[in-house]
Length: 303
Ligand code: CP
Ligand code: NVA
Image (spheres, rainbow, N blue to C red):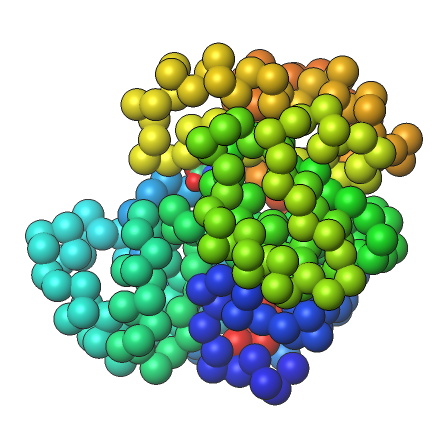
């Protein structure tokens, strides 16, 4: 996929349908055991301002499997935490590493890196989007249903970064998406509008009604009710989000061949019950594994 070489991946909307499908196809062949041509000493920098297990480890392993190197640019041990302007950091790192994966709060920090760096910049999660997660989610859906067309994904809960990337991802590939959130916690209107614009063959629905949203859907998806940086709102949000819990009752309204996804980490007994997370319809461990295959494909396409 020559046209992805050197590109940034800041938002799911940065890639066309054809480009997303090409990354997924490469991810599938890596998962099936195809070995990638060696990366020849290329270096990935990881600049993470928030905690991470899956993204950090899967990116690191992916780069090693591709024959590349990884440097952990922990803000606490670089000059970043001592206040060196991010513009200066970006222009310096650009000259040392070949690709940067950044996890931060404010999406505009990612845009600053993208504006100032010549190397590919990857969004490893911001408050606005989590596109690497959405790539792995699409891969998981594709391997379970053998298609991405004509299926409905229902996302229950907070209209957050994960919901935003899913809205765009579903619209781009042609999955119907319904997002059910409490009033005041819906996804950003600008993201919903963009998803609607991108969706040529599928429907984008945002509702406050969780029961209507899950009816006959094929994929049920949820995420934590308070994301990283919102921990102080956790208790206040619990009663507001309770009707959106992914439990056996809501699950039973979906299609008989339904699967359950969660980006993890999960809070059992809050956004999802332990029974559903560990139940026969859950694909969350495959989904977590697919982070590795999807990001390996992404890195190899961008580099
Ligand atoms: N799903 C996800 O991004 O997990 P981490 O926060 O552990 O990276
Ligand atoms: N919405 C969650 C996703 C974690 C992978 C957060 O931002 O904390």
